[in-house]
Image (tube, rainbow, N blue to C red; front, side):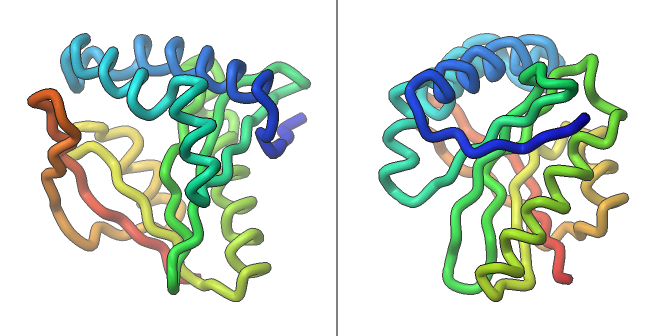
Length: 163
């Protein structure tokens, strides 16, 4: 039913970029401006951006539900934790344990690397995601505002889970 597959090819990156455009436009207009959405999609979720991120240590995955691509994630190994850079799921597939499956996958991956902590950043106004992360055992560790260029900032909480 739910599968998580490594994204390694240009075709995989195109699938993720397409998912990003759909997910971001259905979820984020209530949280950030359309201008910031367009900027962040190009800067962080375009095929070129994904390819560049994989060259600096990020690993991308796409998630399928009954073999239909419905979400994506990216992680990066840091010194003593696994950083969950991205976790996005199409609206129609939220509530189907996709995020839980992704977090369990990331925990197993972290264990394989002998790491017992996952960290992530989440927009302070992304209430449903914050609640979902808390339900999965994450706690807020700090508040931060990060300049991402072009006059835009990310206003986030850092959250972590130790297991």
